[in-house]
Amino acid sequence: MRMHAKAMVMASLLADSLALGAHWIYDTHQIDREIGRVDRLLPPLPGSYHKDKKRGDFTHYGDQVLVLLESIARNNEFILQGFSRDWQHLFSSYTGYVDRATEQTMNNFAAGAPPEKSGSDSDDLGGPARLAPLIFCYRDDLKTLLSLAEQQTKMTHTAPAALAAADFLARVTFAVLHGAHPADAIQTTLDQSVSGINLKMKLKASLASTGENSRQVIAHLGQMCGAEDALPSAIHLITSYPENLETALIENTMAGGDSAARGLVVGMVLGAHLGMEKIPEKWLKELRKKEHITALLSQIP
View 1 (cartoon, rainbow, N blue to C red):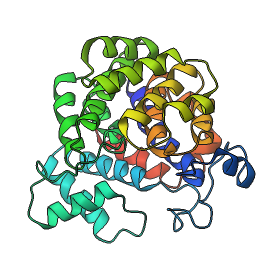
View 2 (view 1 turned 120 degrees about the horizontal axis):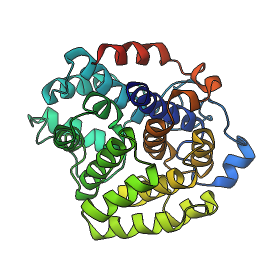
View 3 (view 1 turned 120 degrees about the vertical axis):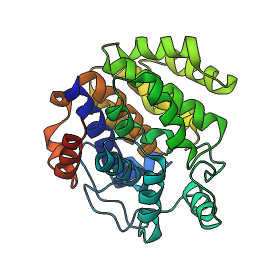
């Protein structure tokens, strides 16, 4: 299981890096025209939200996943106070894009809020999508994982949809790591434990779209950042390409919008399912933090 857990983290971060070149381009015709098929890691276009990033870097989402991994590796466990310090240090002099959830959370910290009370009101998927390092550390302890998944998400995102997404993703990915097929894990979790009627209905719609044209489906379900849009779109990709991580991540990026947050989720679940051998080596070679990530994972039992 450990190698599949490693693949879960690596594929999640790799998906974020693959999305960097076309991230937050909502016009898919622009992606076709100015970039073409995103089957390799690319730098952002001029004028991008991530204009200071280079090929093989992460978006601001991936940078936060890496900080979570570093924090867990340093302590051999998740400590909310430690993660909050590391997270604040990242954004105290950050040169990349700072989204609304991050800005609100930093303002709350500056006003004296503890990490249990610092979160923004954002429902973006970016908060719950950070989970891969946490699942790696607690891959044999679902009860603790669910509690800590809520803690790490709530530090920055407090909207009910974001917290429901964190619980859903922790349960699904845990089940996949323990041998469940992604579609079965998703269906079982959906039947048993999804809170929020809107999210549940959209997740059911995403399952019904399995195998349909991904660009069209995601345009319908939602290209946006909110969990009620982005999570169902990610689930469509997982169930449509369960045995082909490469195609799933390419189709995710080609669908436009918030492909980075979706990619973190798709890479996490399919990495857990397929293992390291299904991650394209040509992409791994271009990932600037690959060796650092590998070293950090080796420090965690």
